[in-house]
Each structure stands twice: as C-alpha cells, then as structure tokens.
Image 1 (tube, helix red, strand yellow):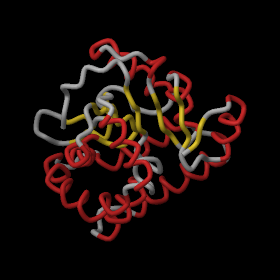
Image 2 (cartoon, rainbow, N blue to C red; image 1 turned 90 degrees about the vertical axis):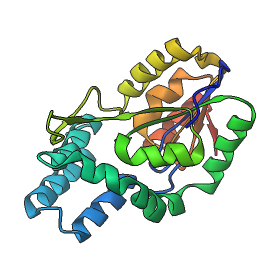
Image 3 (cartoon, helix red, strand yellow; image 1 turned 90 degrees about the horizontal axis):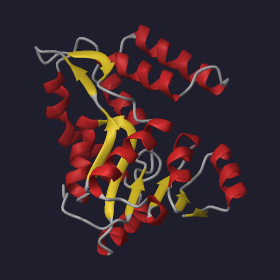
Length: 221
C-alpha cells in the first residue's frame, strides 16, 4: 500500500460491482455457508432484510448492520488469517479489467487513489496491497479486549453520506481538491461521493443511479 502521493487530485473507487465486478459480500457468505458458518436463523434474517430493502422499508445502514451481526462472538484473527486466500481465490479473479485499467491510469498520472466502500477492512487489505491503492475508507469491525468481534461497527458504516464524511476527513489530511478529483460508483449508495467530485463516473449502474447520472450528465465507463 502506497501513501506517498501528494497530488491534489484523487480518484475514489467503490469496490463491489465497480472495481470488483461482483458483490464481495455475496461471495463471502456463499463461502461461509459452504463452511457451515451460517445458521438458519441468520439466513432468514438476511433474506428478510433483502426483501425489506427491495420494498424501500430499510436503508443501506440497516442492511450493513444486519451483515455485521454475523460476526458477533467470533474470533477476529480467524477472519484476518483467511483474507489472503479469500482474495486470491475469490476476489482477484473477479476484479473488473476495465476499472482496474482506469485505476492504473490514475496511478500513472500520480493521482492519489482511494478505495471507498461499505465492505469490511480485513478482506480489503490484500486488495490494497495487490493494487497499490493509497488510501482505504471502509467499514471496520469492533473487536473487544479479548480479540472477539462484537457484531457492531467500529465507527461509521461506510455507506451513503458516510463516504463523503470520511472522504472529507481524508482530504483535509492529504491535500485533496475535490473539484479536480474523480469518483467511480455503481449504485445509489455512491451518489453522495459522486456529487462531491468534479469528475463523477458511473460503472454498470443500477437503474436509480442511471437516472441521476442522466440528469447530471455524468460520464460512464
């Protein structure tokens, strides 16, 4: 992971279904289910959340906290140890070639690169290292003094407006000028960060994002 770029221009990349062509949480839960980690109760809770989300009755914050509840009572180090194999087997093969090419272009220009995502820190670290991304803004898991996960986030869940809040803090510390910067995203959850920069770019957009992008004449990849 590199953190020595000083350009005022940054490129903010969403992860799921943007830099990664698929949804990492879906892959992760499939792996956990195959390994026998998912209880019937949690699966039903998750399916109910998905249904409520489709009906517009809950938001991304609710869904994120539902996902995080899976980790309650589990040893954090077990997940840290599984991160590199998970990246090599499931994430690396699903990186978007087109978006990765744009990432490399920004790096060649000397721009600061930022991964900004609601996904969880432990399995993103191999991504950061493999792709030499400068900064990571994401969701962190709360761990107690015994190394056991509480099932709650540490700090903000990095979705929606929280992405902008964290990006603003990053900009203050690293001299980022949003008016000269870029952002790449695929869903309504990315609209706040896309609106924050001078050069928003949509990637494989959801219907809702496509409508907003058309209104603002945003570029697409």
